[in-house]
Image 1 (tube, rainbow, N blue to C red):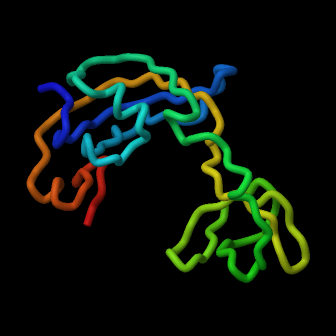
Image 2 (cartoon, rainbow, N blue to C red; image 1 turned 30 degrees about the vertical axis):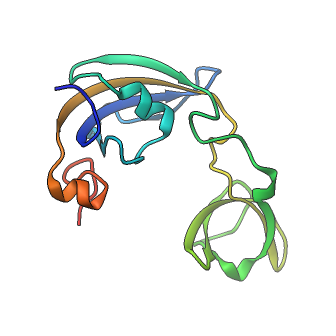
Length: 160
């Protein structure tokens, strides 16, 4: 079966930056699963999966635009520390949760003051070219419930 909309894809990946440094890997763990065509993974990686089959292994390089987008300087701001959710000590480089009117959002702390903190809500990999090694473990038809919910269920996917 080939990867197409309304299929559930399970895959392993190794993510490297342009210097060849490993950033993430699912090899040696359970594969990641997603519902193809539902925007559950980054756009460029989903496009590279289209039409492939279980057992295939491939490499793909994604531009920042195809991955997490370009960095947006407007997404940097100063906020009162009371709006941040974290445990332990607040320090630059730490990813914390920001309480917003649309729910919690992950942000990176760039500077800490006594009552406020400078944060960056760009994705940590925004503005970077990414290099993936992908191995497709399985491809199957999505269930009606998965299509209705907009994501894969079961191991490697979303559990209810």
